[in-house]
Length: 137
Figure (tube, rainbow, N blue to C red):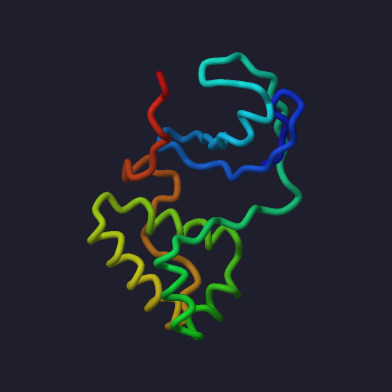
């Protein structure tokens, strides 16, 4: 999405909240630029971006992609939405051990030519694996 917070432009990726809706992170730099603090009432304008924003790739997953040209080739050939699903699947792991296992599995699946992660609930609703951060108080 793209928008303005108190007149200051930004772009953000909407994240599933596990409740069939979405949220987005407001970075501290944007809050400072807009002169707002947690709990303030703000003016927000929002609209879709012309193209989906690329997801930030976890560093350990990027290492796997860099070490495997076939995995990187498949990754680069997937859609942005598919890449978002791969990243969400990795990051939705509750334990570090599971996360690292998913990083390795994702590398193997991509190296084998698989473009979409299977059996992953991208909404987080059914699996309860995706949630927004807790409300600041």
